Each structure stands twice: as structure tokens, then as C-alpha cells.
Image (cartoon, rainbow, N blue to C red):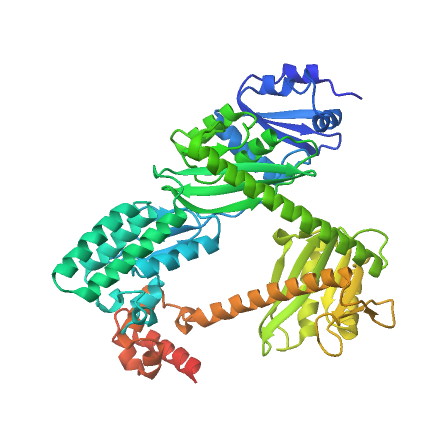
Length: 604
């Protein structure tokens, strides 16, 4: 039965809001926003449509709308619904990360510069966003060379009794032990802030005056250091600056080829290029760059800080709606511009060239990946190309703090949003079979409950024995219908000599070292290994950073700080008698005995 759109339009008001196109089973085909819902929805039925929209409209069985007060509310609701339902006819951006900032603490006498990701807190200063953690940390390292403002954790800073290595290599002025006055430290902080705000010329002028004063006072060593700082700043200026007016803006350029799209975003803050990032949204067939950019901007900036200007290489659909929604979201005017001249046109061309280059590289690697996938299908005698593959690996140090990893590959390559780690507990240390059993049980119970898709192929890092144990675990869970493959390293444990074990075969499959199928298996196995090792190291580092004091009831952050200050660290505390511990402010005799017992036990 054809959908009666005329009857449906009668109940749709001419107000801002969000509409949802539903199919006969109630699934969401498409989510859209509009300043005028009635006019926007009617446009799908009263004009010539492209092939993608014709297919979508032919499947509509119902239309639901939600009225909002403003365009900004509609934008936010649309973004949430797209993330929740992932409609097949929407452009889908897989980017749930918050972007990192550099934070300057404001409440300390000696403020700290630090990497930060999360909601902003009042009082502190934030600089960014940066496109990646790498770009943020690179800037922090650069700042530490230029202006020695501390970057250490507050807990480390508070317990110092002598300068650390950063002071020795001239990357810090040791405020923790009073080697720098608050006034001199504040000057370095001010220079750091000006640099991050793009006011580098002011910093250079100030350093130039100080260099001349030092030379006049015959302080030639100090003058030489200031000269080197100025030279470094000028080199950075030449490399990073793209705008002489010091403005904040983002440059967003899209490029399409072969049904795929790359969107390149450059972050310009205070005239400085903080870096760029490429996105490859999932795009329905026949979607133009205008609709791709419109959907990308709505989803990308749905929960992010907006610059005053966004430069784009094609006018997005509903540009005026987006500008109104972004202006409301930011609390100030936000403009989306695409007709540009001069420097800005050149920046946009640069972003467009980068998008095209990244897309060609991705298409080339995707073609190679497709060939490896076809070769794997043939090697494992599968009926069709595997749509989802999982691989498990185990990592530990001497059996301690065991972590299991599960990585997922689909038809396009690694699906990192589906990666999972499992902290293994309650097993005999070093028992990899028991660790694998626990990880598989936890994972495939969720598969059986329908929370996680069933893979076509399951790789296990191990040989015939490991494969048999895994097969038994899956049988007990009632998991069937997947191809189980053990990846053994071979007699010499050399790359290229791997053996593939299948439960139904008495002997291993040995592929040539140049086999595309083997290269894919190695890639999947190595990724599982990397992910497991990373998780184990993080768990181990966290255990090492955790003080024995944190496990003692009644010892909170303040008392821990008092104890460590009083005894100069855990080593001094371990040598102290209960009576000495009880003299510390806030520590009772009973608590002192408990602290003494816990610390003494840990140090033995």
C-alpha cells in the first residue's frame, strides 16, 4: 500500500523541528531537521529527486515529527537521533571523540600547563581544540623548550623535596622547591599564554627588550639564551602562521570519488594552524557534496566548540539553518562561507587538495584490502567474503595483571569502535588457556544475547592446543556458525612462516610468505597483539601509580598529602613508627597503626 503523503502533511506544523522517515517495519530510514517542517517534508513529494531520494521515498511507510522551539534545539535532537538510529539514508560520521586542549590551571601560585580532554571548568584557561593528542603534546613539548612552565602532575609536584630531571635539562625552573620567584614564573606563564593566543610578536618584542637589557648589564650568557628563544619563536612563526589577522576559524573541504567521500578539517586558532584531520563519513549512494557537508557540519559541531567562521568548499544544504543553529549554540555570530578570495581561497584549496589526496590513498589501500580479503576467503574455503572477523590475544608480565584483547575487522578494515579489552581475574597466573576462556565467555555471552554481532571468522593467537580449548568453550556456550582459525607462529617463530589451524583439518594450512591472505591474517593478529599489550601496560602503569595509602579506609587525598609531606614520600613513611605517624595532622592512633601495618607490608 502506497504511503499517503498528502494525509500525513495535514498534521505536520510549519515550525522548526526534526522529522523521521520510517519503513514498514518501523525502522528509521532518514532523520532530518527543518526550520519549517511542513515545507521541508512536502519537498520530498513535490519535486524531481535524485536516485537516492527516490529509493528512500519509495520505502516510506510513516513520518514522525518532533517540534522544537528553535533551530539550535532541532540540530541537537537530529544529531542525537542519527547517533542512536544510524539511518541508512543519512550521512553518518563516526567521530565520538572530544578534542584535546591545553589547559592552564588558574588557582595555583605556580600554574601548570597540561594536556586536557573533557568538559571545561570555570577559572582555568583552555587553548585549542587540537586535531589529535599528538598535535597537543607536540605543542606542549615545544612550550617546555621555550618557556619552562611546569607540566608535572600536582601529586608529583606537591611531594618534591629536590628538583627533578626536567630542571636539570632546563625544561623547568623548579618552583616545587622554590628555585624561581612567583614574579619570574608569572612572566614565563604570560609568555606561554601570549604564544598560545597567537600574540607571538608581542613575546618576541618583550624578549628583545630583555636581551638588550642583559647585554647592557654584561650578562652575555642570559642574553644568548634570550636570543636563542627569539630565533626559535621566529622559526615557529614561519611554520605555523597562515593568517596575519590572528582570527579563529575552521576550514572544511570535501572530496568525493567512487562512492566514497573524505572531509578534511583544518583548525586555525589565533591565526595559527593547529593541524588537520581527515574524516571518511559513511555516505549513501548519489549524495552530493552539498548534502554531505550539511550533514557533516551538523554532526561534527553538534557537541563541539564553534569558531566564528567556517570556510567550506561547497555551499551546504540549509546553510542559513545551520548558521542560525550554530549562532544559537555558540551564543555569538557563526558564519559559513564558501565564496572566497585571496589568502582564504588558497587555504581552502589547500584543504581540498589534502582531502583528495587522503581519499585517493584510502581508495588505494581499500582496493588492496579487498584483494587480501578475497584471498583469505579462498584460503579458508569460505562461501563468501567475511563481513566481520574477530581476533583475541592475551598479554601479561609473569602472569600478573593479565589483559585479553578482542579486535574487529569488517569489509573496510579495522573497526576500532568495536574493539574491547578484558581485565582477567581469578585465574592461576600465567594460565593463558584460562584467560582465553574467561575472555571468550564474557564476549560471546553478549553475542548470544544479541548485544554484539556474530563474526564470520574468529582468529586465535595460538596453535592446535589453544584452538581445541577455544572450540570447547564455544561449544559450551552454544556458539556455532563461525569459522575458527588458530594462528601459530611456525617452527622458527618468524614472520611469514605462520601456520593456520582449522578444527576440521588434521594438518595446518601453510601459505606463502607473499600471500595476500597471510598478510591480512598477520595484520589482524598483530593488531590484537598491539591492543592487548597496550591495555596490559596501561593496567600495569596504573597499578604502579596507585599508592598503598589509597587502599586504607580513612586516608583521603588530604591526609595522603600530609603524610607524604611529613615523611618525604612512601620510603620515609615506611621507616616511621606508629607514634611518629600519629603526630601528623588528622591521623589518630588507631589510623596510624593501620597505616604503619599497610605500608610496612607493602615495603617487605
